[in-house]
Image (tube, rainbow, N blue to C red; front, side, top):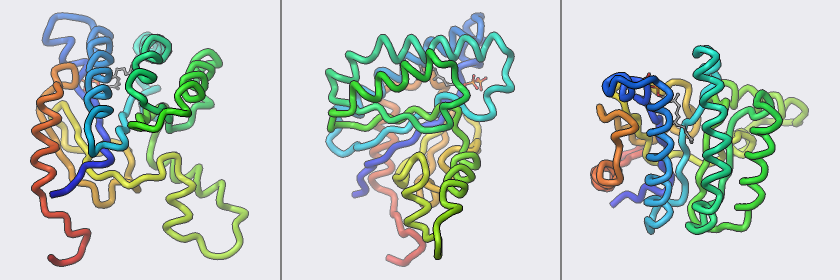
Length: 225
Ligand code: FPP
């Protein structure tokens, strides 16, 4: 049986969920933030899950209307401030990934604060991918390695990325079948699950079903069994 120790999720479908309810897109993001809480709590209590890496804002998401971007920034700030007790109660360490330097000073401070206050937690590691793009992550790592003499190995590049851990199970909600520049290096041998459910409708039961299916898949990593 496979153990899904690192789960990554592309949380898609907030806008469509809101539209179906006759609401503004931002209401979908608000509902999506609630699901982030329940899924994080579930993962923190699961014996096998060590890491949960969630795609919260991509390097491409700046192209959205200004008001939506501003709302997402406010939502992230308030989410992080409000949910610090949830991280601590569940022994969850927060480790952001992505290029944080483009965020406002307030958001950067809040991210740092939650990172520092949860640094001692040794349960689940929850990473939010913030201003994250896999191509950008790889480029930033390559630039950091420019002065290294000798060969750059896979291990060295892995260690230099923001996310240093291979993904076991990658889930995308919302019905699209693409990776959208998410954890491309780390997902080289991830099992991919694409489901129709829109992120605000995604529940712990849905995740459990996927984990059970994943447990039964045969992972060969290019070899033979
Ligand atoms: C994709 O839905 C979702 C995002 C671009 C942002 C993800 C954000 C959240 C789940 C909420 C905030 C997160 C935290 C951690 C507080 P979409 O807007 O692309 O949906 P659509 O494809 O239906 O338009």
